[in-house]
Length: 270
Image 1: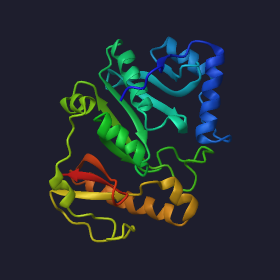
Image 2: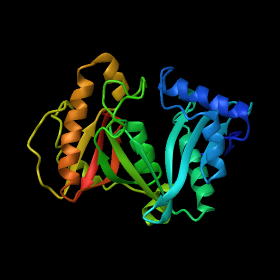
Image 3: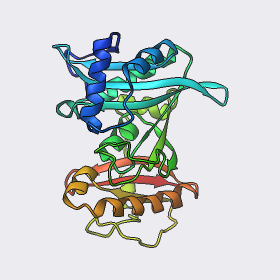
Image 4: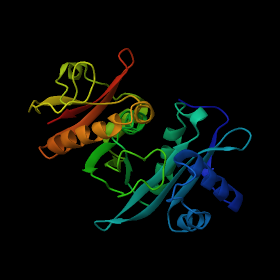
């Protein structure tokens, strides 16, 4: 999807860096403690980092992405640390365009793989990362960032994260970017290992089948607001399940959102 009159480019002046700070607070809350300052935004770009924004036709910053380039196992890699899009622009492909711009910038430096993290309970992020970008889940990190960073989005759930690996040259990635990453419908008939028929989290016995499904809420933030006790229950439930299956050679193959039932599933294959 391509939205007309949207420009994506590196931020290049102090006013734009300040606007990026405001967008961070608007996204994660006024008490968010991990804000990337204007100085770090500027300096990072001098050392191969990316601080890029998406601007609408009037020049307003509607989204941004920030990341750092370094070495892992003596090879250049990029860590995408933050991405945010204003609510009224979400679902329009802005996040995807920011990621593709970031990829193109770091490829100029000889980077061919990018890492980042996201909350496994956030269905929108799962859809973007797995279905739209074709990224792989490399690791489940329990309480990766220790505290909720003062963020309204993170509060009440702990900071468990999926570590994502995006290998630019992987054939799966190319198919995802072309929109050809098709779901095997047979996967939709496989066992759901962590919820009951009503979609409520339960600590059921975990089956060893070649393909299984792990359910998450459609909107974990709404659950936190309307059913506060359910948020931690979903976290502990999925933490147990992902630890179990990923440690036994399963991998996240795809992510599925059922529009009719309003239920979401990760599909894991052994």
